Image (cartoon, rainbow, N blue to C red):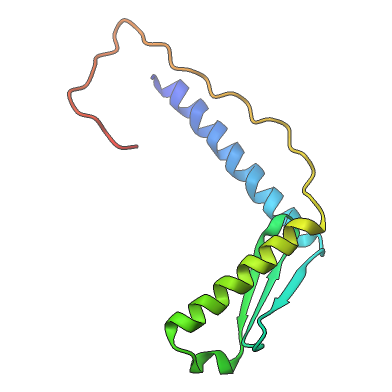
Amino acid sequence: MDNAQLIEELRWQLKQIEDRKAENQRLLASGNHTTVVSPDRSVTVLAGPGGLVSEVRLAPEAMRFDAATLGRTITAAVREAAAAGGQVTPAAPQPPAPQRRRHIPADDDVPYDTVFDV
């Protein structure tokens, strides 16, 4: 892949990241949030449309729990908020992402002896 192709691929990836960030900001700003409070009132979770968790609050009493109990309480509240948030208002359908361009090997492409994890 030559430099121009690499630059084009990076621009495409940056555009995808910016689009995702904008969608997340839109969901957070929509104001349709669900608040879930654990039965013992030690954990409060705020989730928006699509189940996007925007905030987790711990009451001072939560610090008295052992780590395993607190973890289970937080996890249960997050799951409940995410599920409820997913039912509030579904996100608007997004157009399909553009297809990534397939690299066509050139005559001067040399195979490598090393496999790189990318």
